Structures are given as structure tokens and as C-alpha cells.
Length: 495
Image (cartoon, rainbow, N blue to C red; front, side, top):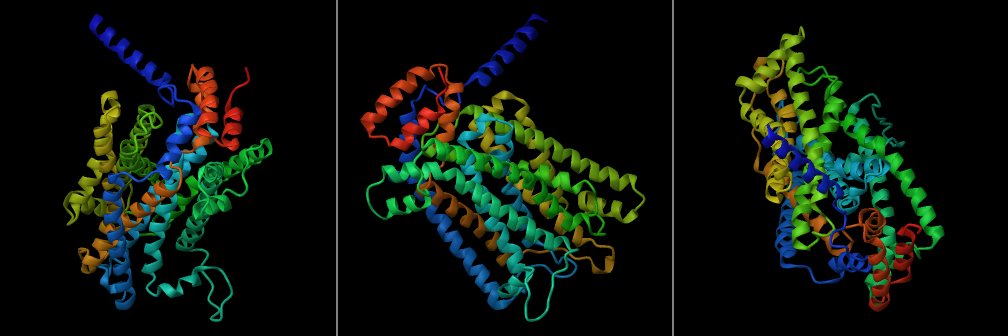
């Protein structure tokens, strides 16, 4: 009994230490934060960056070739045929849309709820959102066949008098995803403005300084600038919050509003939203753990950030597991024999049953290790589980879309989907495209929001007063810009 009490006390003490851990470690000064983050852009890239960038460029070229081959040859080079009209293309579309949800969640919802630990990872998550939505938009655009006619999706007058079917959830997708991309892009750019001004002031005269000057919009760090910035940031965060819930809900309507057994379920909207946040956070960890190592950002991306994101993965993974069980229960409890048959073929004796078990293992069982603190504090364990989740979320979309269509209402039309080489390399190529964009972002833009990290440092660091005074002295020696000193003073609490 005493041993159990001691164990519980030690666990509580460790948790208390983690909660009190500063968001910026080692009592770093403001000037150190500026120099460390700007140094990623200003200095030569490490060897690890090149090892990732060159293969990603090659894979992007493969993706471009595959899409060009599709345009010349036709959509038949993809493997879908009746009754599997939607296959890897829509699976990949839903997968990439889900990846983009963590960025807006971290930036908007956690900002509105005043979760200060978001500050070191929100910039990278927002960039990830933009790039993931760009990857997602490629698949439905080319799935229409004649991609040069895709502009007919826009509700504008045209010579053929063709108007969209506004009752179709496929058209809702166009509006929801385009709105999400636009608002996320503006939100991301707005947060970049103060840091772009910092890079502008630190640059030597040249084209880079000119570009940073253009995109920093004349930022000088005055009280008036900060006031307008904070108001606009708050409004965009409030506007982005419902988008997190609505976009993937609308994507789920592609299935939930149909009458296909296995699709028309009311649980789909919350199930898809939880799954998108689940997969999005896993991708954030997949990206940020190597970035933290390659660029030596351990003092800025701390174990507290990783621990919190692992807890969110555990929570959303449990919600996803509940949704899987409820789908089976409703198929069993309902009076539709075709619904029950669909789930039996999907999970018990269908031709693609291994996809279902892989999905269940990766999304439900693998994240359960995060109940234990030692796994949440192990970078290797977090990285492995995050990659399991990435794979599991793709399997989930494949199970929902392809395995359902493989066994439709008419047994005479049943067939098994076989992906072609164009399917495989197009999907692999989108990962290269995504990584190429993210690595270019690391190269030319600050990966961490400098001003926001400084804003949370006073409350997290008990020795703030000493480091703040030392930071201003170092700023004079290092030639730190006026806008940075003003930002530092603005972030300081009144004494």
C-alpha cells in the first residue's frame, strides 16, 4: 500500500514538474530567440535539409509526370472502374484535407482558449495546412477528367448556360475547401507580418530584403500596428474556428447524404472532424520532431509541447475508436440487412479485410501507449506512433470509400479494386510535393512565431526580469532592430 502511494506521489510530482516547465527553456533572452529563429533562414541549411529536399523535388517531378500522363491518356489510367468509381483519388483527397485540420485548430481554437503552449508549433502547423490543402485539391481537379473545364464548378454565367447543382455535397466541397484554404492562407500570412519585418531589418540590401519589405507591409512595430494586428488576428481566429468543424463535416456529407450501405450514417460529421484533428496532430509531430533535431530547437519546442500533442492524439484516437464501434453497432442494431452485410464484408471476410485491421491497429491500439508518460516523453515512441496514425488515417479513408464500393448492392457487379502504377506514384508524388513546399518554407520563412514566443515567455519564466534586461543589452550589442525591441517591450508585463 505504501509502495503504491509512493508511486502515485512520484507520478503526480512528475506531472507537476511538466506543467511548470517553461515554454522557453534555459532562461533564454529575447535576442537569443530572435537570433535562433532568424538564423534558420539566414544561415546555410544543414545537410539533413538537403537529404530531404532533393528526393522531394524528384518525387514532385514524378507527380507532375503522372498528372501529365493522365491528361494525355485519360482518367482510365487510374484503377477505378464500375462499381468502384471513387478509389485512390478521393481517398487521397479526404486524407490530405484531414491533414490540414491541425494547423487551424492549433492557431485558432487554442488561441481563443488561451493555450500558450501552441506558440512554438502554430506557424509550422499553419504552413502544413496550406500545403496539405494544395495537395488535396489536385485529386478532385484531375478526377473530373478534363481538368481544363474545372472552372465550370464556379457559379458564374457561361456560354453553355450550365449551372451547378447546389443540392450536391460535391459542390459544397468546392465552396468549403476553397473558403478554408483562403481563410487559412490569410491567417498564416497575417501571423508572418511582424517576423517578416524582423527579417527585413536584419537582411543586407538586395532582392531578399526587398521581398521581405514588400510582404511585411510597412510594419514598424508601433503600438498602433500591434493594436490593429491583434484585432485582425482575433477576428480571423474567430472566423477560422467554425471552419475547422464545418470543412470536414461537409466532406463527410459526400458519403453521409447518400443511400449507399456503409455510408449514410449520422455519426460521419463528428467522426470525420475528430479523425481529421487526430491525423493532423500526428503529421505535426511527424514534421516537428525532425525539425527540432535538425535545427537544434530543443529550447523552443520543448517536451511539454510534444506531451500535450500526444495527449490530444490519445483523446481523438479514442473518439475515432468509439466511432468505429458505433458503426458496427448501428449496422447490427438497424433493420437494414444490406448495411450489416457491408460491414461483415468490410471487417470479417471481404477481399480487403486486412485494410480494416490495419486501420484499427494504427488508429485505435497504437495511440493507447500515450496513457503512459514515459512513452509521451520518448521522441522515438512519439514519432513511431505518429507515423502509425498517418498510415492508419489513409487506411480509414480507403476502407470507407473503396471497400464499400467493391461490394455494392448487386453481387453481379462486385469487383476488387487494383491500384495501377499511376495511382501509386501519383500518391507518393504528393508526399514529395508536400515535403518540398514545407522545406522551402523552412528555408525562407521563420518556422516559429518570434513575437508570440516572446509574448508567453514572461509568464512561463520566473527569471524573466533578469533575462529581459540582459536581452535589451544584448540587443544593443547585436544590433537588434527597433521593431524587435518594441515588440520585446510590448510583451513585458508591467512592474
